[in-house]
Amino acid sequence: MKLVILSGLSGSGKSVALHTLEDLGYYCIDNLPLFLLKDLVLELRGRLDSAFASTAVGIDARANPDELSQLPALVCTALDQGIACQVLFLETQTEALIRRFSETRRKHPLTRGDRSLAEAIELERDLLEPIRRCADLCLDTTHTNVHELRDRVRGWAVGNASPKASILLQSFGFKHGVPQDVDFVFDVRCLPNPHWQSELKPLTGRDPQVVAFLETSPEVRRMRDDILAFFSDWIPRFETDGRSYLTIAIGCTGGQHRSVYMTETLRQHFEALGHEVMVRHRELS
Image (cartoon, rainbow, N blue to C red; front, side, top):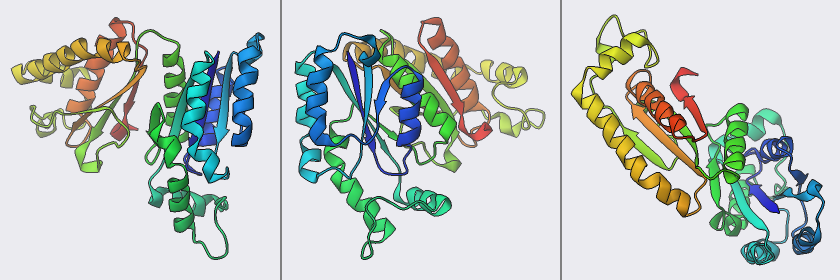
């Protein structure tokens, strides 16, 4: 029996995440009053039918603050009852949330006549902090579109059922900002840059000419081998510790050549080891 508690800031993508879990076969309940969660846990324990084998519950800040603070204890109760309970929390930077609410013209659930949208967002952030602290995974969706969020939630959920960690690899350009919701960031700006080769500049790290250029460099080969050696040593330990989802970002200056090449190299390595791998080339999309 599996129970996913999904929470997060309004506008961060909770509906998309819950629908994704539903597509994966989860029985989903949105905006369940927290005072009913304990009864649900007890009910799930006694259920033998497969329809509830995987259940997901959406919780938001409209719950009573005292009840929100008790959620970590409810998670422990679920675990004690033999239910594999995990908490997924979605968050987004305030500026991005304000922009999303302005674009969709939706009303934030905590806004009132004397409370601005920015104040409502910060109040919600404070109210949900107990859930965020006990989350198994926090996803920052500030720079994530709907399709990327679906893939990330799907990868996390599938990874929960897999003995090997599910891995998201992302290339990016430092000049466009460092991704916020990653476990590891590697900087490959010290490697030879194809950008300065006129015939390679318009290409990307997926093109054979760029791959050939980079693989002739001893520094590139050494960086690749060092990164692979690090993960060969530590991923099994993360898995032993219960980590089922890892995010790895590789950055160069513009996110076109070196980071893309290194990301594709890691993809081949992890896929050969049997990991489920998702790849995002942020600056190429």
